[in-house]
Length: 442
Image (cartoon, rainbow, N blue to C red; front, side):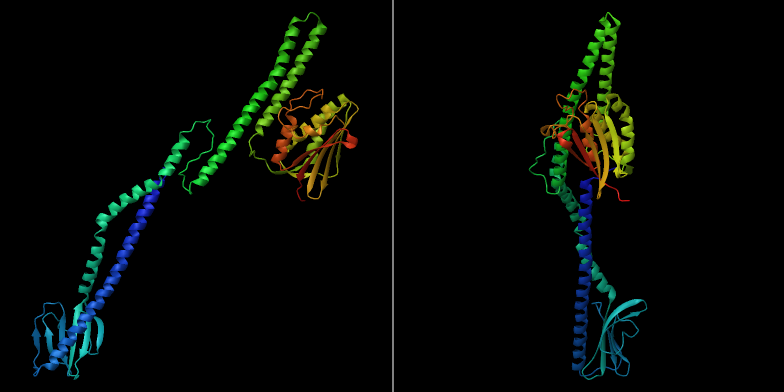
């Protein structure tokens, strides 16, 4: 069960206040005990001085021990120089209270703790000892502490209610914030703009607004992608349907064969488009995870060149590979193979017969350069900024394509932290596609 923020704050505040109150009562108890001790010590001194003055002023002091009644809880003993008891109170113990030295001391007699003050008279004949039980001091201090704790019986529940209501009022903006987010429709992605949002919640609001913005861009992107994909798929499917109708109505084998070849060609184009769409949909998320492993780019390129060699031979294009380095990079071998395959496929497809396509791998400092150089028609400089857009095709190329190859290349390059650049070929003929990867130190 998830904990409640309101309960958590209430518990923290209530426990903190309660502990503070108890600590205050404890230290007040200690302070009251000290003050009570000081006051009662002063009373013992005053009582001893009064008795000493009274005895000094008495004309005759009987040598026989006498006992006086006491109703104050203060015990008295008066001892003579020879060690005989002259006077004591009815509450005094039979044992001597303390010693004959002047001043205060604490002692225990038969399990009872006493606070004692001893004083000699001016003549040095009589020693007055006044004492009190420590129980009296403890009882007074405990009485003060209990009076401090009595308000807790009423104040703590009242304070708890106030804390609960205060925490609820403090969290009210957060509750309104929650309701605003909960009541939103799935397609309502406008930024939140709540005027009473607390500063502590502003980072959450900013994060949600940033998420809404990304979702809005992503949804718009997907809408355009879906619309474009539907449009692009409609063309080859319509062509296939048309050629199927032609084949159905054909009267001779030559016409039938021609229509069937067109159907096969259209099917291949649709299959290629679907394959490219699937690859691109896999790469759509901004944070597509890349399996970071050491990959020899030369091995990936060699496989792709071998794969496209039959197509190049049929078209009469000289396809070659130049690698002066293994091209060790960090990345996903499968994605890098898709990247190279699309680049080589484009180069061979758009290079005319008797043309040339060279794939080069070089290392410069801490970078690995992958270059595909062809002698095809190239890409106009104005079109290079949009050539990697989805479904974009250079007009007048005379070749069928999905318009997704360079878009896939650009996305895979970004996922690997590589840069993509298009330049004119040598002598203004053809195109040079350059990809720069961070090299792995060996």
